[in-house]
Image 1: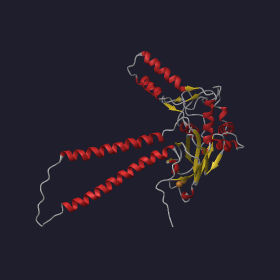
Image 2: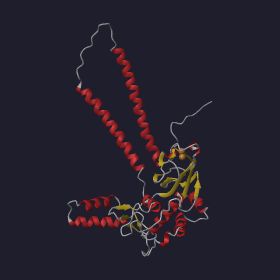
Image 3: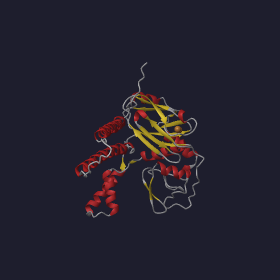
Image 4: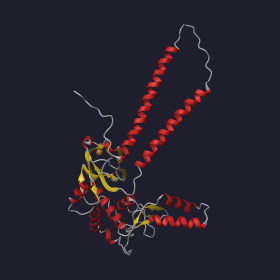
Length: 357
Ligand code: CUA
């Protein structure tokens, strides 16, 4: 009988070969040093063994050149591993802005997925290959961890906050999904499948449709049903702040600080309206808490709806590198000529809005 034990799982994302190369290098280095040191110990044990009872070894003089060599070389090697690992880590944990958004809610003991088009699935995730996929994840109960070995991605899913992970599948197939954090009795049963499809098949799958409409329209319905709309009016005459153009913007708060309106901020404002009060609105806030009234999945629907309000006008996007540098230059009062300051302001302005067709 032949048993094949795979050294590593199938490679099915753009990260897979990079992670495997680094891991392979660590293996090779470990074997090299492990074997090298063991053989050296054996050789020295034989060569420098005590030959008679009252033998006195020669005094040892410090060998400077040797000491420096075996300090500098491992230093260079370990810094190399650090830079290599950090660069992969940095790319893995910074989501691209052009990714396909999918929302994930973990629960003892299942994975629930929501697509922007409205499809919802449990323990099965359908995605197209060749596209970057971004998962925004939270959980209804305890900590879980989203893990797809074939993509080499793993991320904790923590109650009360959003974590995200992204990947780009490179070939169609069916890949196992695990929970990688012990979360109770049926932790080992909290598994599922990621179905990576040809883009055309994916479109067909999407158009298979749902009775409920898109995630944003479900969110809009909820927004009306919960009467959010009676205070957050788009004409600015309501008792709460306007929400169009909110997502991704900098919000000035009553205490003088600023906060970026991201998923976490919106979630917190729905569940705990007193936490951050927008400048110019009464303190304490007149908004009641919706804790216990909306589920994690519904929160994601509301957030998607609020996000979609941006796209109806223009998309505010994260400032690019140049805009970030310009912002720092302006805010810290770097000694730049006034012409350069004007240029910087223009870069920031141009990066804030990107009209979509
Ligand atoms: Cu969920 Cu382990």
